[in-house]
Image 1: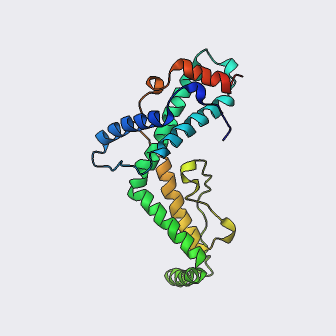
Image 2: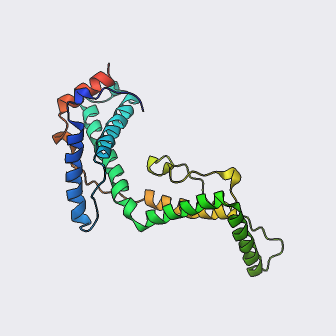
Image 3: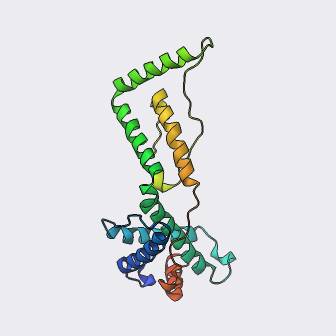
Length: 218
């Protein structure tokens, strides 16, 4: 990430992040009354807010603000940070508690384990081929499993979870990858509600204007 001067925003990042998270959890609990939202490290909330602010500035840096109406940049900044932070917290504190996410994590653990234990993979591969050929009446059928879809994970939340290595994949790894890809696709397609409040009450418009002026329009 690029370096930005966040001082013009004139907010206490840890305090603001905690206030936002508290309001976010209040709304989430109305939808999911029994969900566990007790966190281990409040420092991560500050880091999440800072990362969202920096990403908003990075997006503004790519934009020709001279072609936008006056004040558009401030509204964009508020909206981007709200959406980005809400999306991250939804994934981190709601999706990660889902059965679907646990299955993805378990499959990835199996995938890494068989890569480190080739003998296990060979045994499963032999059993698979025997079973596959036994059930099929076609002559010389190809038992090779292929990846059914190409996935480019632009979503940072899943990049560390699914790291394909196509060159060294065998049938077992490809089988697991297909299931993992489908589960991740399904999770990424989920519509994420906005539980985070609008940010104009937390970040003064004049301070946001100065933040953009110093970091983008200088």
